[in-house]
Length: 458
Ligand SMILES: C[S@@+](CC[C@H](N)C(=O)[O-])C[C@H]1O[C@@H](n2cnc3c(N)ncnc32)[C@H](O)[C@@H]1O
Image (cartoon, rainbow, N blue to C red; front, side, top):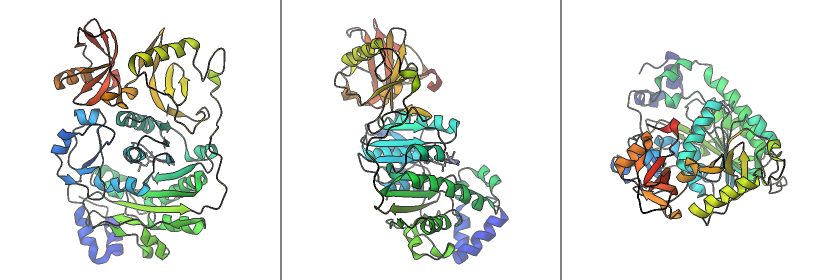
């Protein structure tokens, strides 16, 4: 790979004797991997093609991912290169906590955090760029999760809405991406000797917002996929120098992981608590991770978070934005399909019905692409369940299910109408293939009408 000359001389200077091995790693192929979704059936077909486990991530494997496979499309796996997987382990969110993933798209780390939270608590996944936020929403929908709100906001706007609110915050920052050069060599075109310092400036602004949202006693994880000390140790040093309430939390180092380099910043020995994953020491593309804890001194904010109500939904006989007719339609659907379902807080956005996770009383003040679990759409006098709901379910969660063969699943994701059982009553069914919930179908007199979203068909 033709690396920029200034990049080569910079790392020769920084790494000395190690530089040849570091630079040679850029000529090796990129490392692939995937994590398994613990909330779904085991993706045995993809695991069978794995080349090994990721030693430091219980759900992590090395190996290729087929983006059109049943395992991927049903959200049983997420494709992620191995060194990026360590970030979720370091954040280590607990079930029931409030977690913010501030720079979340396309969602690799978010899905990892969600898996660790086991469906309990609240996760806000934010992305500043709308197009990327839409991809994030789609990836999280496939992973299948009820306790997530996807927002498309600037860190500064979120900071106004969530003062001292979160137990854990991840800032997986936009960076100079030197660890992505192998996978996406085009990234080198943006690289100049000054680029890391420009990125560092932006990172400091994002981190300043993040800290305003962290509860006293809470933890902040800062990570990048670059090797540049300006963004890595020097940003961590800036945090410690600027916020006296912050201390660095030591991160466990597995074989092949390096300490942070205090000498690449202001010499503060605490910086050694950070971790560096270098591609010439451990198989992966490369990452820097630092973890901080905020002192538990300031008063903690009250538990319930209130933001403006969505004005659209205050009129008439509406409760939480639902008309009487809509409430009835959804109750009828629940009775038929999921009688045990206990919604947290139903809420409508136009004709879309969501279940807002506990801990938020509304998302009216935010640009929320997914204000919780997308349950479905109200059409003229009927309710149509959403793919997102199907993908949060285990087949055993409903008796209204129809098994598809692998060939039928291929026809389903292609958008075809399928032959169905003739001995079942008409109505909505969860379609299941090899223990994975794959979507909804409507059985009408022995035919399964296809409700797989048109934009996802292949
Ligand atoms: C390294 S990527 C995040 C990757 C993601 N965490 C994952 O694991 O899939 C950084 C993200 O920060 C976003 N970003 C760029 N500028 C930003 C800003 N000023 N504030 C917040 N996020 C920003 C980028 O659009 C990008 O999606």
